[in-house]
Every structure is written in C-alpha cells, then in structure tokens.
Length: 232
Image (cartoon, rainbow, N blue to C red; front, side):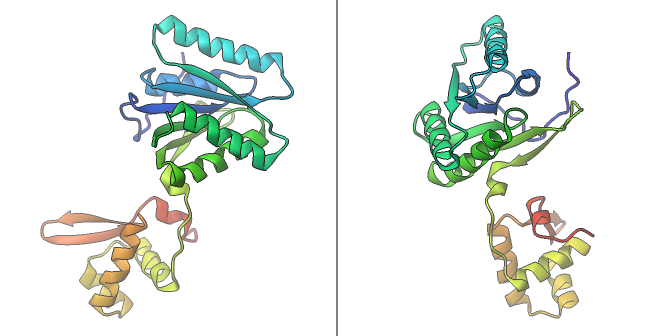
C-alpha cells in the first residue's frame, strides 16, 4: 500500500511504545506501523482537547480499526492535550507518556508527522525532558511533506551537549579526515595525552566514534556531531 523506507534503527518493538501526534490524516501513523509492525506494548495518540474536530476522531477510529483487524493485543490510548497552554501541555504529555510506559523508563518510537504545530512542539519538549527523568530512549521520525520518505534521529541525540573550543577544533579536524591519535596529534600539533583526554570526552558525549583497522584505532565524528559542525 505504501512504499517503505527501511529505518536502520528499527528493532524489536516488544518493549517499545509508539507515540504519535495526530491531525486529520492517519497515513503517517499507518506508515510507521508498517515500518515497525504492531509488536508495541502500547500506542499513545496525542490530539488537541479543543477543538474536538470530527476529522481527528475519525483518524483515531481508523487506526483503532487497523489494530483490531490485525488481531494485535496492543493497547491504544488517546491522550487529549490543552495545546493553548504550552507549559501545562508539556506536563500533561509527560504524565500521559509516563503512565503509558508504566511509570518506568524505556524505548519509544516518537512520530511527529501530524497534528497542530503547537502539539508537535509540546510533545517534542516533553519527550526530551522525560529522556532525563525516566531514561526514555528511542527514535524520532518525521514524515517529509509530499513524500513517503521520512527523516529520523535518536532521541538521545536531541539532548544538547556543551563542547569546548578545543573539542570543536578536534571535531572539525576529524570532519576533514578521520585519523588515528598519532596522525591527529601531528595535524593539530597537540600532545597525545591532551588529545586523548579530549577524544575520551567527545566519545562520552557520543560525538566521536572509533573504528579498528588492524591494530590502528581511527577516530571519526558521529552523526550527532554534525549538529555542532558548520556545513562544509
């Protein structure tokens, strides 16, 4: 029915919750279900409390019908949010998501492909806050308008980190070309001991990863690092 783009972060959903903002079109949610399957331990659909638009109610019923037809035992919960009060909305969404997850941390698939812009923003902020409070992890997916493709990012990568000028300099050099510790030390004219400590910090912030080539260890930026690098 829908062309599917494979998501490299799509894994077993048995312990995951699908969280989706909804508007007047169920297709973004259906595409996500087709990508991941219906093995979720719960589905949380978020919609504005007011206005209570019949089109949104129809979307909920269409998704519920799909779940029922598959015979899946996945609980489907509809969370209504007062989108006119940003701070209260964030609190409401956090509470509803925590309840859906059983008051514990875990993984979610966060789908922000539909619904009012205010609801989308409030949901994103709520999930980022919960990622620290309840150790919520998982993946964010957003459909590209006019397309069946989507973009995705790890939720943990949405949490900003602070990098020092030295760390940025190392990242920029690795962006030009991945390198071993010795090679990078020569290129930056920096002592290996100092550079090693910087690389360790960047690894902890998930901005640098290591690859092994024989006995050599090659450092390179992660996908997350490109949020902190200027386009080349």
